[in-house]
Image (cartoon, rainbow, N blue to C red; front, top):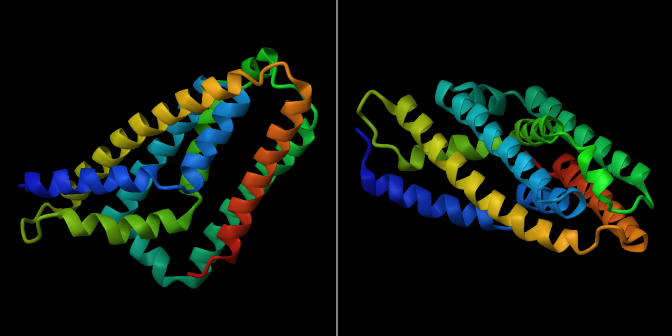
Length: 208
């Protein structure tokens, strides 16, 4: 049986962590400003869905195996960095394209959702974070520790969806003011490329 106090403490800490500046929230902001608030919300849903994968991995002990294998950790880390660098290249190719409504319509919800999932799942540091974070808020000795971790993972996912969606709406409103302005569109596209590249390079250079 889960302790309600643990769940509330977990929720409070989760909200603070979700709002802290990091790759995920910056990713949502970049998508919302360049493609509109709906794009940001779809991206947020993808990022939050990736949390379930990490929670399952932690609950089943897969993350512990990943952490003990330097090769597996590095392989996953480089795969995530490569994906982010591909996104940066794609943003550079958009170049001087204005942030027009036609550009927004080309971004399907499924594609943005998939992008959010891949960015989250391909970051091994998220798995290791959940492996260290979730056990701090479960009630030990009950025999249902994996179930408790799954419940906490769902709680984290729901609050992440709510907060990321709110951020997406706010960033989207600001981005709408830039629609149809080619000179500003170029800076947003290049800024997005720089952001993706910076996150990918940081992931590669980060220590285990």
